[in-house]
Image (cartoon, rainbow, N blue to C red; front, side, top):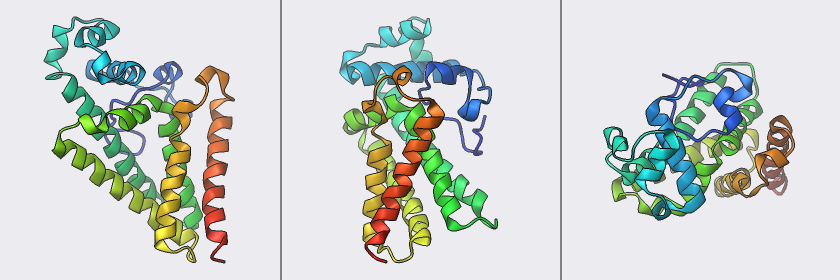
Amino acid sequence: MSSETGTPVDPAVRSEQDEQDGPGGRPARPRTRREQILGEAARLFAERGFHGVGVDEIGAAVGISGPGLYRHFAGKDAMLAELLVGISERLHDGGRRRLLDQEGSAHPPARALDALIEGHIEFALDDRALITLHDRELDRLRDDDRKRVRRLQRQYVELWVAVVREVHPSLPEAEARTAVHAVFGLLNSTPHLSRPAALPSRQSTAALLHRLARGAFDSAARAYG
C-alpha cells in the first residue's frame, strides 16, 4: 500500500480525527494490525518513556495479549527501530517525490519549496508523538539503525538546502543549511503546543507554520541581498 506521494505508508501515529480522514480530509485506509501496534507503541513511549511502557500495556491498547505482539515484533526494541527508521524514510522519500512532481513543470522554484514545507507540516501536525520519540529515544537504537536514521536525515536536509538556494541564490550554502535546521526546529515544535483541541483549526495552524517557515528563509536571505 502506498501513500499519496507514492512512498510506502509508515506506521505513523495519527490523531483521532486522522483515523477517519487522511491529509486534506480524504478518507484514510484502515490501518493494519501491525500499524495499530506501532501507533499505540509510539503514543505510549512518547507519553511515558520507552522504559515506562510494557509489552502487555501496548497489547491492551490494541486489544490483544502482550504475548500476541510477538507474532508481529520481536520486542519493544524492534518497534522503536521501525518507528524511527520508518518516519525518517517517509520524510526523505516523500520529500524526493514532492520535488519530482515539480520537475518539468512551469512552477517556479518557490513552489518546490512550498511543497517541501507542506509535507513537513503534515508530519509535524499528524505525528507529534514521533517527534517526541525521536528526541528522547533515538540513542536507544542499535548502531546500524541509528546510523541509518542519521543518514536519511542528512539526505533530507540536503534536499531542502538545494531548493532553498534555488529560491535564494545569494544565500551561501552553509547559511542555507543552518536556516533549514532552524525551520525544522520551528516546525517540529508542535509537540510543545497546546492540546490539538485548544489550537486553531488544522488549516489555520498549517497556514501559520507555513508563513513562519517561508519568513525564516526570506529573512535569512535578506542579509545577502
